[in-house]
Image (cartoon, rainbow, N blue to C red; front, side):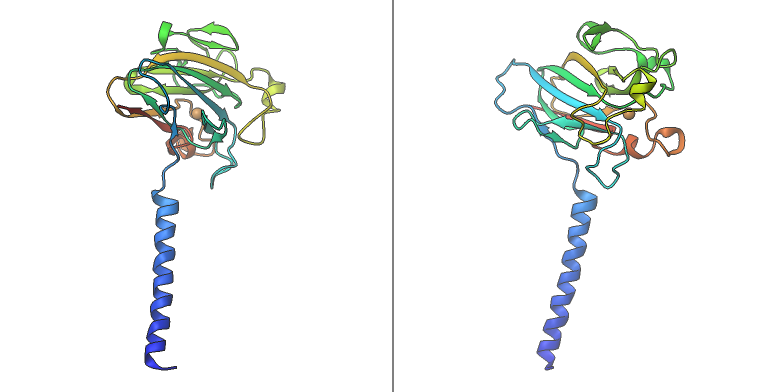
Length: 228
Ligand SMILES: [Cu+2]
């Protein structure tokens, strides 16, 4: 082989390795979970209807056994594996959350209280609630909380032992025992990113239950993007 051919071959091989490394970094380390947009086509002052579900697993990531939220795309109605969604500033946000996961007791009964919603209440399967006692009954799966606006809503779970032994096993869930939570709140007037966090120690297999999905964006941690 002539020298130019050898140099050329070496260069091509080198660039292939560099390209592969760049792909790995961008694809696995820098790419965040997708943002589901609830702002397009919404007139000023109009309410938006955000639909989520929380599941015992996800089958949509490198960690299929982690508990996770999903967000429904308002246009396609497809479930997207993420907990990042965008709403208009100052809009009324009507939330519907399907709770397919089983119950886990809260570390602090304070997180069983509904705060920051219109009326400081939510409905679970049509019943108005202001607080859930996760120690008295098996009743709380996760929480949906946005700390900076004092929003905290405990998510109801299927309540019976039979239901908890027979949870939906393929995510995003389309059937199986679940509770349906509804509540509304007013999005902040200031555009920006607002942290969304679950307060149930639902990171099974991690120290104190607060690792894994609890600290991974798109699972039990997310962001509400408020658009200007
Ligand atoms: Cu959780």
